[in-house]
Each structure stands twice: as C-alpha cells, then as structure tokens.
Image: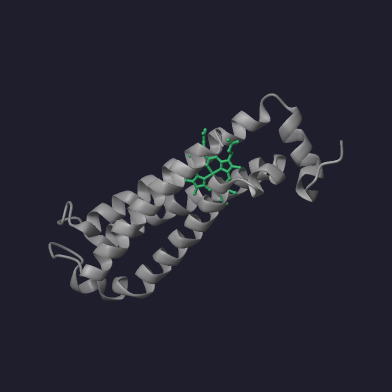
Amino acid sequence: MTPANPFEALPIAQMMRDSMWAYPIVETIHIVGFVLLVGSVVMFDLRVLGLSKNIPVRGLSRHLLPWSLLGLALIVPTGSLMFMAHATDFLGNGAFQLKMGLLMAAGINAAIFRSGPYQTVSRWDVATRSPLAAQASVAASIVIWIAIIGCGRLLAYT
Ligand code: HEM
C-alpha cells in the first residue's frame, strides 16, 4: 500500500516501521533527550522560584544551558524519525497537535524570559528574590514542560 503522507514513503521512515529495533532505540534516545532538557530546565526554574538562593542564577544558567541544548539536539531528530514513520496518524492525533502547540508555547515563554526579566538578573543573582515576572514565567515553564511529557505519553494510547 502507498503511504498517505510523503514522509512515510521515505526509506528511513520505512526502516523505522520495518526494523524491530529502530523504533524502541530511537524512542529511548528521545526519552534520554527530554530527561536532560526538562531536568535541566526545571532545576533552573526552581532556583528562580527561590530554592537554593545562594547558588548564583547566572552561574547555574551557564552550567545548565549546554545540557538543555544537548537534550534538544537528541529530542528533535528522534522525535522527527518517529513522526515520519507514522506521519498521517500523528498529524490527526489531538495529543500530538497539543504537544507541538505546547512546544511552541515553551519556546516563546523562554524567549520572553530571556529578553525580559533575565535582562536584570545582575540585581537578583544571589540571595535575592527574583521579580514576579521572572517567577511567573518559570512557573509557566514547569507546567508547560510537564504537560508536554503528558501529551508525549498519551501518544501511545490515542
Ligand atoms: C520536535 C519535537 C518533538 C517531536 C517531533 C516528537 C515526536 C514524538 C513522537 C512521534 C513520539 C512517539 C509516540 C509513540 O510512538 O507512541 C514521541 C514520544 C514521546 N515524546 Fe516526543 N517529540 C518531540 C519533543 C518532545 C519533548 C520536548 C518532550 C518532553 C518534554 C517529549 C516527550 C515525549 C514522551 C514522554 C513520549 C512518550 C515516550 C514513551 O511513551 O515511551 N517529546 N514524541
């Protein structure tokens, strides 16, 4: 049968469907990726919310950001491979659509945080309460990332 979506016809998508090992290996790397990404993001967010106030926010950000980026570098290609294998199903799946929308919201929220409240971080780097706008943004970040994990998990059941 001819696949309905051009992505599904690609040889790599075919391989993802035919191989017994490809899908579980790629999915495991996807999981390692989001553990790194969400783990590092939430550790940073909790610091901005006021936990471990003596750890400098800027130092923590410099330490965690490369791990977040490494996580992202694992997530995007593996997520895309799994998507290509069953593109038609995923495109029509509400949990997948919501997950992609939430990913965009997470990106926009991070951009607003970096270009807004984070610009004044030198004033609240250590042992000081962060501004309300910063706290609101990182609280939203935690909720959005957990919702993304929930949507990812739902894909197996919807
Ligand atoms: C470009 C971005 C992404 C794409 C295209 C993508 C796509 C996918 C696809 C197609 C699946 C397979 C579902 C299945 O076969 O049952 C999946 C699983 C999953 N994804 Fe993503 N994903 C992306 C990013 C993320 C991110 C950022 C997170 C977490 C923050 C995440 C969390 C999950 C979870 C929890 C699963 C289920 C794993 C499991 O049940 O074993 N994904 N993703």
